[in-house]
Length: 114
Image (cartoon, rainbow, N blue to C red; front, top):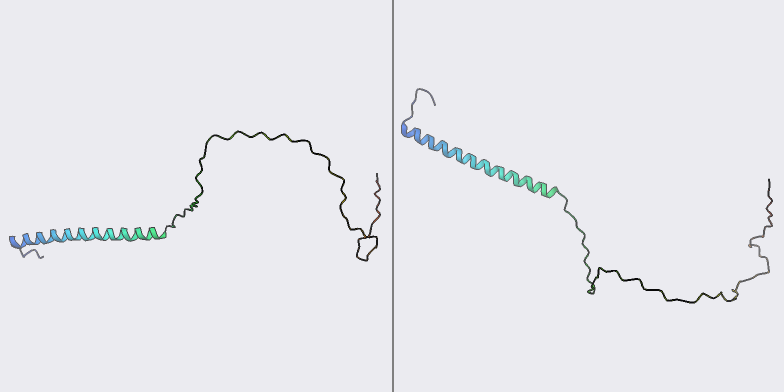
């Protein structure tokens, strides 16, 4: 506005009401915009976080009462002393013929060198 033009009282009051309404609308719109920005950033953060993986194995078995008292050890029955093994011969394949693929017997005598 230029300085040489004066507004009427009615126009000035209407100008103040319009300015007040525009400030309220601007604050309201900026608040909505900030809420929208926080929601978008929140969704981005939630998407980027890896999900927490929890492995739970559930098995169902017969109902069993678990007692906290340990069972006393059972005494072992007394057994007789073991007897010596019987004289049994094992069957072994014996060959008196020397084959060309047999392992030769080496006569090695160890001597002690001091």
